[in-house]
Structures are given as C-alpha cells and as structure tokens.
Image 1: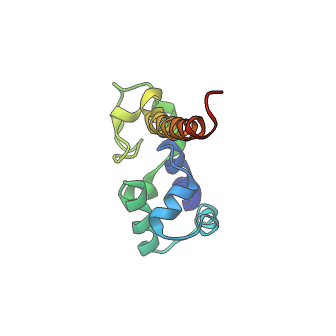
Image 2: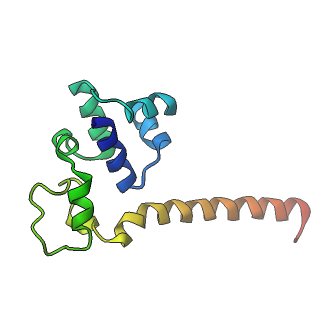
Length: 125
C-alpha cells in the first residue's frame, strides 16, 4: 500500500503530518488521507517524494520489513533493502532522533524567551 510506505518513510525521518502537509501546501487532513491511499498519481508521488527528500522510486521500492531487519547492521548488503535517500549513515537510532532533538532544542529556546518575557512583566518566579 503506497500510503503506508509514505507514512513509514515520514516516520523514519521524524517528520509530522503537519510538516509534510505544509511543504505540499495542503491541509493536514488532506495529507492524512494520502497516507491511507492505495493509489496516487505520479505527479502527487513526485511532490511527496520531494517533500520527504527521497526519490519517487525509493518510495515505491520501500520495504519496511527489510529496512528494520537491517537497522544496526551497517556492514551488511543493503542493495534493495533501504531507501537510498535515507542512507546508511541514518541507520543508527541517534540519527533517527537528531531531527527530533533539534526540534526540542528550538522549543526550549522558544520557551526560554517566553519565560524571560514573563519575568520582565511579573518579576522572578
């Protein structure tokens, strides 16, 4: 199912539906529907691949079972088993969570700014 492959790739890249929908200039609900589809047009597949930073053929060839069986086995033969756009360097758990860590760091900076505004307005806690 093509929608399931798209969802798996999005999750492997630690991207939210909202983020991908924004890149596609559609609503989150419309994007959610794409992830439930069994067929999509070549044009839409190309747009989604671009948003996920992979090739359309990588989405079509993605096999989550082969991918997950090879996680951590960075010296193994990966031909046909993972998305080239994800790459071997992203196989480790650290890489899978780097984007999430960056997002959390940005959120912490934003909260620090909000806290500073609060302190200026109301004084120390």
